[in-house]
Amino acid sequence: MSREFPRKIAIIGGGYSSLAAASLLSHHGLEVDLFEGHTYLGGCASFFKRGQYKFDCGATTLSGLMPGRPLHSLLLSLDVKPENICQKLNITHLETPMKLHLSTGKSITRHRHFSTFMEELAAQFPGINHRRLWQRMKELEARLWEVIGASQHFPPKSLSDLGNLLKPRIIKKVDLGPQAFIPLKTHIPSHYPQELKDLLNEQLLISTQSTLKEVPTLLAAMGLTYPEDMHYSFGGISTLAYFLKETIEKSGGKIHLRRKVKEVIPLGKNKGFELVIQKAGNKEVRFHADLVITSTTIWDTPKLFKGSIKERFEEIHKNKDKGTWGAMTAYYALKTKSPQNILYHQIHYKNDPTFNRGSLFFSFSHPDDHERAPQGIQTLTISTHCDANRFYPHIDKSDYEKIKQAFQSLCEEKLKEIFPDEFEILHAEIGTPKTFERFTNRHRGLVGGLPHNSKNNILTFPAQETYLENFYQIGDTTFPGQGIVGVTTGAMILAGKILKKNFLTP
Ligand SMILES: Cc1cc2nc3c(=O)[nH]c(=O)nc-3n(C[C@H](O)[C@H](O)[C@H](O)COP(=O)(O)OP(=O)(O)OC[C@H]3O[C@@H](n4cnc5c(N)ncnc54)[C@H](O)[C@@H]3O)c2cc1C
Image 1 (cartoon, rainbow, N blue to C red):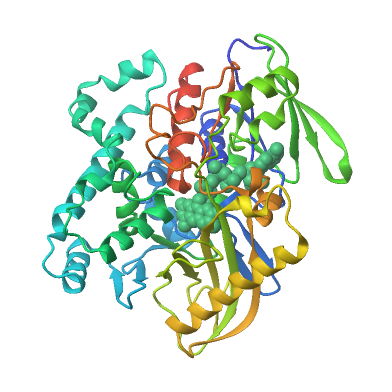
Image 2 (spheres, helix red, strand yellow):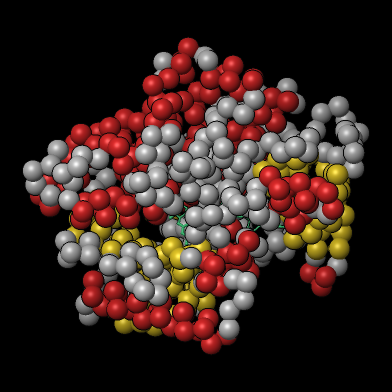
């Protein structure tokens, strides 16, 4: 390394975690080069186009923009006013974020405002003190963001991190600690009807990848309350990602698309790394960096190395993919007879033998979002969790097609059941874990991140620091992971540490 401090930074991947880290580091004067293998940025929160339609490919709900939440804090750290950016990009806070259609036929509207949502629950499930649980969730969520915001050393991974957590502002919140381990199940009264437990389970699964039995209460608090913070982004979920791209480029950072990092070669103590990068036409280029941050999953990171380093990374994370999910997705363009104004719907059903899961998540484009579909047409992305192992190590073409067809039938059956006669299907296509593997380079198409549970908790979750000096991991398989909010938090924590190392103030 030619300098005393690591100033030349290479970031692998162009998803939200990488863009958040790159924007902060370049904003504070470090030399940043970001390499993305795909044509578009956004990773699991990216998009694809089909003629006049633009589809969100994975993530569809944008949260974290309320004050004190990660995207809000990120924008403030970049010296921009979140309200101005939301206005400029046409990102709107949803009053009625979501509707839940239970398998028993009930439907429940998730209102943004707490009291209205409590009234809705009381009307649907009378005789239960809903406020007790939900108020607790709301308080825990708010207090947790305060701890994360105040410490920037969460979770503690070193003595210095622990020291930081002992600040008076944080120590006051020490009672939160046990909630990082106690499963939410222990807070659920025994008289809760199964229907209500199912509702909680399905809501937790889409936000935390876990269920009542396993999910730690603190994470459950974030997962259950996030609809309050849900925003609709005109143009798609990647609009903000492209805003971060602009910010990075304005501060001198460079974004290289269609550049897949094939290999990372450590050059020895204080000498940095050489990256072997594949360009179009299978040409290779080499790039030198003092410090490398990768957003590859913990199963893909070993593939960046050779020999004993590869083996060591494999050993560190072996068996961590247990309980991790793949996704089945469906993409529709629908001619709407009466436009759908509640844009997000979770449709619960009794376990389906093909997918062994119990809900579908529907995300419509706004009827006035003409960047995504022309007047009178709405796009729809449907997703559900699935067992990715059904597709690996090998699946016959005919079995693969059968799974896709079965999923398409399920989606269309539910579409007709919940929205009878409201739509005409103009375009349909299906995505599988193989699709995610191809477009995001993720091992076995595993998405959504590591579920937080008794095995993967704040103490055992994969760390950002690795055993290689100046080589770091971010993204949804390292702490705190999960969703745009989680990966942005992780990226901000790491960027803060790197800036401090360079004597720059985050
Ligand atoms: C179906 C589905 C629905 C979801 N719904 C939501 C939601 O509604 N809200 C929400 O907040 N989250 C949601 N998520 C989760 C969220 O999308 C992810 O957790 C988050 O976007 C992950 O960001 P990341 O940066 O960690 O990784 P990724 O998004 O996977 O980005 C990694 C990037 O790195 C690139 N890459 C990988 N290897 C290389 C390499 N060797 N060289 C160069 N580039 C490389 C990939 O192409 C990719 O662009 C959903 C995910 C899925 C799949």
